[in-house]
Length: 294
Image 1 (cartoon, rainbow, N blue to C red):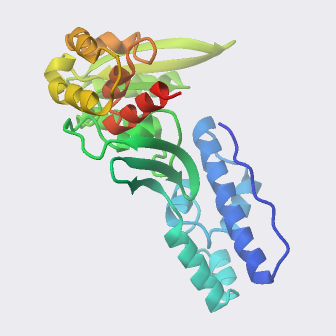
Image 2: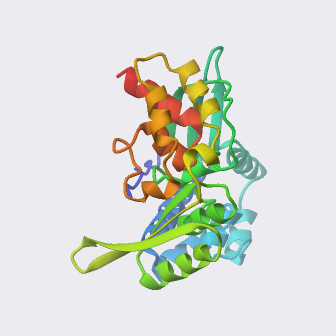
């Protein structure tokens, strides 16, 4: 996982430097959380000690993820030395930091931007303002489970994918585990439902295995989704020579489990990849727009 560059402190007043240190701590904590989740191991004790001393400036969810005390003695002592203006400025910055999904509305289309606590992650341009297609399995939350980025609300991506499959909020899920025991427990939990589940393993580096659990809802695309409405959305928004009608007719008869072996673009059409992952339709339409205008 790529590390973000850390801004250097600039010379200035004590208050300005204090605010810069606050931001550096927040950036640092995001990197620690990302590393922790990616490696499955907690940070070394000296790092945790440094974070505990900074827990007064960390959002509560960060403290909970890292196992830090909320409102610790360190935090209360540090807060006591802040002036009223510094505390007001810090609270305002926390409240105004962009996080999550932000939509900019234009006359004929929308622009969607994704942020993680002020850090820009992705942009989707030229999204349609209205989508006819509706499905509980296709939603905004699933866009955070496609491997493109991470947000702190999802502290365990594998568990989130499994939970949404069980609740009927995701069509198909691919769960990769570093430990065989975790994969076996996940597969057992999913098999207790009506989901189709299969397991496999692969060697990513010599002597290091990844244990995959693949699960999906039962049924064909035609039965699970309103493909007529989805086709109309594509036809209304994309003016091209792409033969969507032929593709929809071909893939509509596929069982979801047929995509266990080939699910990603370009092995299958982009709209199929987006649909079976439960990715927002407007996101996929935006990706088509980018591809067709390159």
